Structures are given as structure tokens and as C-alpha cells.
View 1: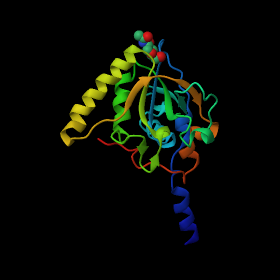
View 2: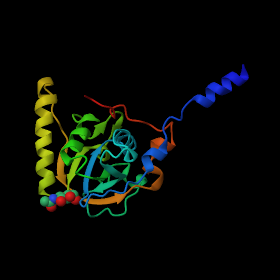
View 3: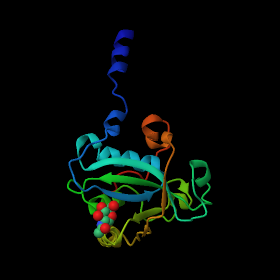
View 4: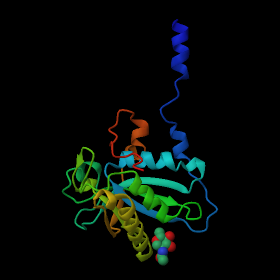
Length: 203
Ligand SMILES: *[C@@H]1O[C@H](CO)[C@@H](O)[C@H](O)[C@H]1NC(C)=O
């Protein structure tokens, strides 16, 4: 009986295999792009992004960093403690390096809309505050136009029929700061970590 139970326990697969998500791809692409977006707690946003685009599966995403996007020059060198009250106006965000030959900027923006609730201003699930705003931080005019075009498309197709409004802001990139190392694969390392319920596929 005990042996049997042990066998069952041993068979239980690990919840996730972090190795799959830590692989750093080397890409033959000459040109790599960056997309930066925010949609609530960065732990779950990174987790769902890695699950759908595991670097080891060559789906186009090479690396994801969680960090703090700042828009106020008065507050430099942020950390989790200093931004979590919302006073510095930083946003928890993801910086994704990708190969545009495998996945496009527009596809990643559509994915972003699909994996959170884009209709709640400065909140996501039980998290409230400007640090949890939904935002796309564009690096140049090309990205801005692409983000606006996907937003209009998603609004018309997914939200207008339900009389709901996208409140995501699209703005120029501010100053980026990587989050502390223990936040990088937080939910993979902390199975009891809080996972925002809005971070799932909405369509
Ligand atoms: C816009 O920024 C992205 C990301 O860094 C870059 O790959 C792309 O070449 C830029 N586009 C233009 C027109 O500068």
C-alpha cells in the first residue's frame, strides 16, 4: 500500500518545469524586437506568456524580463517595496525580446489583450493601484501605430458587441528598471504565490 502510494506520488509530474522557460534561445534573426506591456501583477503575466511562448519551443519569444516602467523622472532606482504603494507611478511590466520572423509585434499585442481584463482601470483581479494599470509602452511611431491598430480591431471585434470599453493606455516608453531576481520566475518558484484570476485566455 505504502509502496503503491509512493509510486503515485513519484508519478505526479512537477507543476511546471522551469527549465523549459529559462532556456535562452540563440536566434539567427538579424533583427530582434522588443515589446513592453503591463497588465496587472507581473508574476502571472510573465507565467502565462512563457506558457504560451516557451523559449524552448521556438515560438518567437527569446526572453522575458519583469520590471518597473517609470514615467516620473523624480523616482529612479525603484524596487518592489518602493513601487508597491503606487506613489512613484511605476507600472509592473514585461519586457519581451522576440524574433519578428516568428511572431509579430501585432500578434503579441493581441495576445496581451487576450490574457487579461483590459476593461478595468488601474486594477486587475484583486490588485488595485496605478502599478497594476493596463498599458502598452511603445518604443517608436511604428509600434505606436501597430498598437493602436490592434486595439481598434480588438475593441470592435471583442468588446463593442458587449458594450465594453478597452481602458488600456498606449504611451511612449519611460525609464525601465529590471525587477529583482526573485521576481523573475516568481510563480514557478513559489507555487503558493498569488496568481491573478484575470491572467487566462479570454478568447
Ligand atoms: C521600433 O522599435 C523596435 C523595437 O526596438 C525596432 O525593432 C524597430 O526597428 C523600430 N522601428 C523603427 C521604424 O524605428
